[in-house]
Length: 165
Image (cartoon, rainbow, N blue to C red):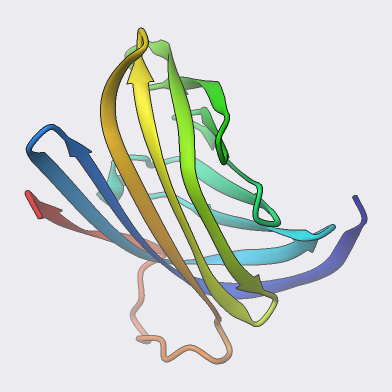
């Protein structure tokens, strides 16, 4: 893949939902990051914070067109989540108290990202020992920081949790 040296400062709005049986949990996060083109896809990087439970961790989201998204966390809480439509992948997680392996299968990847911004939505399931643990969805909106309306006191990242909804 041919990489571009163009890197843009961005604002990310991330909304995630996790359902396990009748229980559902949602989280929203607004943060600053960077975006660069990588071949026919993109790489997005941002720093996590203590407010969302992942302090001292950097997250990289590698988007490969419509077919594959890889989320890699490095630092205090390392993990890699490979999401590829219609394929099952085994992914490693470090939760601070131990490591484990989970199966993941992406049901849908909708990539509408450009260097000017855009959106990425992914729906997937997580399993452990071949048993369904949760159904998940995240939606990321990316906006060029120069075009964003940004509060002057914006923290590097903050979550807005919505328990049960």
